[in-house]
Image (cartoon, rainbow, N blue to C red):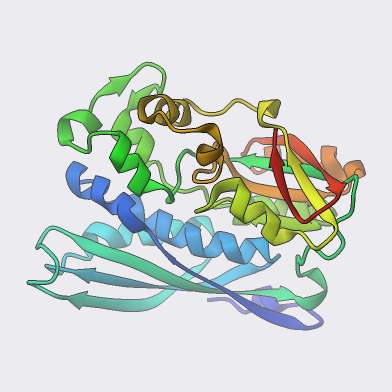
Length: 296
């Protein structure tokens, strides 16, 4: 990997991210489609690095399998690294016949990034009156799939069924890889905007992730009607008869990243998000109050 990312940094600080794909892999096994889950794995690691204000440097993967066929998976990992401008420098493959079925595997990863200490996103400057910007997700991403699998039949026939509301098959909608937001956050930084706080909406949805960027004395208010919730989440809620709060406490509901910025910078942020090829919305505000989040 290049050392250029250290150039001009006054005090380089290393940040890291570790995660896996989870039970979303069960869908990949059923559909025999393995070229996107590697992107999920990279995304879950490098998005956390981006949340801290960092740029990923390198990524390592870990594949545990019943039969060693890493070429099925590694293309997706390489694609994810390209998307995040991150070097794939190695990893570990463990072949464990008798522990994993021959056509199944597990996938996890680890990434290291760097940020100048003065550019760390810590949330300490968030104050009442700040604007919350949401950046659209690509779908369910890589969390909540135990619940997804309890709602939908995970059979080849069911996953290959086309739905007009989705504009694709159920399997295609659910296997859509996690968005990688590294370049988007870099575009915002290049626009001269200070991101005060950043939350990657993963497992635990809004209720568990948004408070992580807050400090005591400030409260986030998310307006759920500020953007169109994607059809896949509506299907999940209706078919599974899931309470709305549980939906927002499990899934990203169409928003993969939440940023806290000065209201004067909101338009600049939305323009930078659009320039990066993504979609952004003003989804709420910060108020004085007990640390936490309200979805209303």
